[in-house]
Image (cartoon, rainbow, N blue to C red):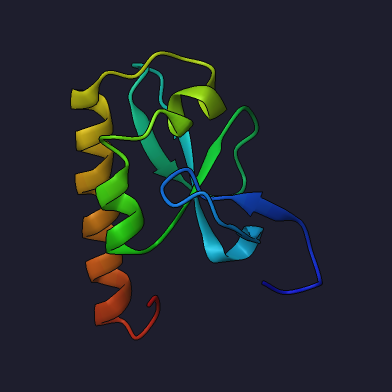
Amino acid sequence: MSGDGPTRTCVGCGARDAQRALMRVQLDEAGEPVVVGRARKGRSAYVHARAACAAALPKSRGISRSLRVTLGQAERARLRTSIEEQVVQALAHGRGE
Protein backbone atom coordinates (compact mmCIF):
# COMPACT_ATOMS: atom_id res chain seq x y z
CA MET A 1 0.00 0.00 0.00
CA SER A 2 1.31 3.38 -0.96
CA GLY A 3 1.47 6.32 1.45
CA ASP A 4 0.13 8.79 -1.10
CA GLY A 5 -3.50 9.27 -2.02
CA PRO A 6 -6.70 7.93 -0.49
CA THR A 7 -7.05 4.30 0.57
CA ARG A 8 -10.09 2.06 0.24
CA THR A 9 -11.02 -1.42 1.43
CA CYS A 10 -11.56 -4.23 -1.09
CA VAL A 11 -15.00 -5.82 -0.58
CA GLY A 12 -13.59 -9.11 -1.88
CA CYS A 13 -10.58 -9.72 0.36
CA GLY A 14 -11.01 -6.99 2.99
CA ALA A 15 -7.49 -5.59 2.50
CA ARG A 16 -6.88 -1.84 2.35
CA ASP A 17 -5.08 -0.48 -0.69
CA ALA A 18 -4.59 2.72 -2.65
CA GLN A 19 -7.83 3.82 -4.31
CA ARG A 20 -6.16 3.84 -7.74
CA ALA A 21 -5.26 0.13 -7.31
CA LEU A 22 -8.92 -0.87 -7.00
CA MET A 23 -11.89 -1.02 -9.37
CA ARG A 24 -14.92 1.07 -8.44
CA VAL A 25 -18.38 -0.53 -8.39
CA GLN A 26 -21.67 1.39 -8.41
CA LEU A 27 -25.30 0.62 -9.14
CA ASP A 28 -26.55 1.44 -12.63
CA GLU A 29 -29.98 2.90 -13.43
CA ALA A 30 -31.53 -0.58 -13.24
CA GLY A 31 -30.04 -1.20 -9.80
CA GLU A 32 -27.43 -3.68 -11.08
CA PRO A 33 -23.88 -3.42 -9.73
CA VAL A 34 -21.39 -2.45 -12.46
CA VAL A 35 -17.73 -1.47 -12.61
CA VAL A 36 -17.45 2.25 -13.38
CA GLY A 37 -14.79 4.87 -13.91
CA ARG A 38 -13.76 7.43 -11.35
CA ALA A 39 -15.78 10.29 -12.88
CA ARG A 40 -19.21 9.21 -11.55
CA LYS A 41 -20.48 10.55 -8.24
CA GLY A 42 -22.36 8.55 -5.67
CA ARG A 43 -22.04 5.61 -3.31
CA SER A 44 -19.56 2.98 -4.43
CA ALA A 45 -17.60 -0.07 -3.38
CA TYR A 46 -14.06 -1.04 -4.34
CA VAL A 47 -12.58 -4.37 -5.35
CA HIS A 48 -9.12 -5.48 -6.46
CA ALA A 49 -8.75 -6.50 -10.11
CA ARG A 50 -7.81 -10.00 -9.01
CA ALA A 51 -9.54 -13.29 -9.68
CA ALA A 52 -9.40 -14.22 -5.97
CA CYS A 53 -11.18 -11.03 -4.92
CA ALA A 54 -13.82 -11.46 -7.63
CA ALA A 55 -14.33 -15.09 -6.57
CA ALA A 56 -15.07 -13.96 -3.00
CA LEU A 57 -17.90 -11.62 -4.05
CA PRO A 58 -20.75 -14.18 -4.22
CA LYS A 59 -20.07 -15.13 -0.57
CA SER A 60 -19.29 -11.62 0.68
CA ARG A 61 -21.90 -9.22 1.98
CA GLY A 62 -19.36 -6.38 2.03
CA ILE A 63 -20.49 -5.03 -1.31
CA SER A 64 -24.10 -4.84 -0.09
CA ARG A 65 -22.96 -2.91 2.99
CA SER A 66 -20.82 -0.53 0.94
CA LEU A 67 -23.57 0.21 -1.58
CA ARG A 68 -26.26 0.24 1.15
CA VAL A 69 -28.49 -2.05 -0.84
CA THR A 70 -29.45 -5.71 -0.58
CA LEU A 71 -27.76 -7.68 -3.34
CA GLY A 72 -28.69 -11.29 -3.77
CA GLN A 73 -26.19 -13.99 -4.52
CA ALA A 74 -27.19 -13.86 -8.23
CA GLU A 75 -26.29 -10.15 -8.50
CA ARG A 76 -22.99 -10.74 -6.71
CA ALA A 77 -22.26 -13.67 -9.04
CA ARG A 78 -22.91 -11.48 -12.12
CA LEU A 79 -20.59 -8.85 -10.72
CA ARG A 80 -17.95 -11.54 -10.17
CA THR A 81 -18.19 -12.52 -13.84
CA SER A 82 -17.90 -8.89 -14.94
CA ILE A 83 -14.81 -8.33 -12.77
CA GLU A 84 -13.19 -11.56 -13.96
CA GLU A 85 -13.69 -10.45 -17.58
CA GLN A 86 -12.02 -7.11 -16.81
CA VAL A 87 -9.13 -8.91 -15.08
CA VAL A 88 -8.58 -11.02 -18.19
CA GLN A 89 -8.60 -7.88 -20.36
CA ALA A 90 -6.16 -6.12 -18.04
CA LEU A 91 -3.79 -9.09 -18.07
CA ALA A 92 -3.98 -9.25 -21.86
CA HIS A 93 -2.88 -5.61 -21.99
CA GLY A 94 -0.05 -6.07 -19.48
CA ARG A 95 -1.83 -4.55 -16.47
CA GLY A 96 -3.15 -6.17 -13.31
CA GLU A 97 -1.79 -9.00 -11.15
